[in-house]
Length: 225
Image (cartoon, helix red, strand yellow):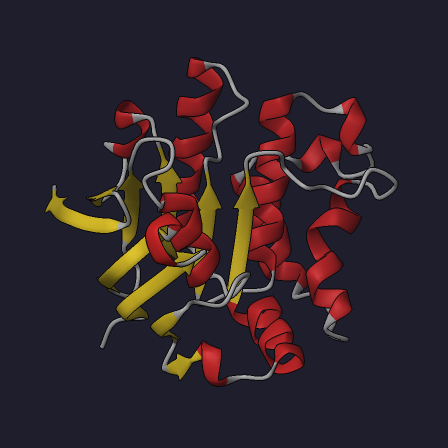
């Protein structure tokens, strides 16, 4: 059974002759432990799709099922809790809290849920991402690549069912991009995470297990390695 599945997912804006079909009947299935890249040009619908997969926006129609739960049947507060527990996000702009140090940023989602971090597991993430010497640093004292590593660590820390990465290398140079994506792939395998990444970068996409192409709100197909 897929860990993530959409059925006839639609997101429309406006109406009549001016209607915009950002998503137009998307059927998608991602297996547990898979690393999938969704590739498309600007305006293709890939960011809208990622927001739907993460429960950040509600569709016009259709369903999204994450870890056996149809997420849009949940009320807003229930969806917020489910998202915090089951979905990790890695954003292009890192979205780190500037007044919290690296370690505090990492464990923040866990603390918001009222839980204690699994220190052994967190330590493994820190070592894997090479952040041991940076734990007390504030985000503005880190390079872009280091900040993105922290964002990946935060996404993994709560042991989510799935990690969604939104153009995670968009603000990084090509070498740092390769390093960060390599680490994302390593952590996905090491910690048995399912990863869905959107990108417009074909070279970056080739690091994934499978590449799915989207244009005009429709899936064109996917290719496995």
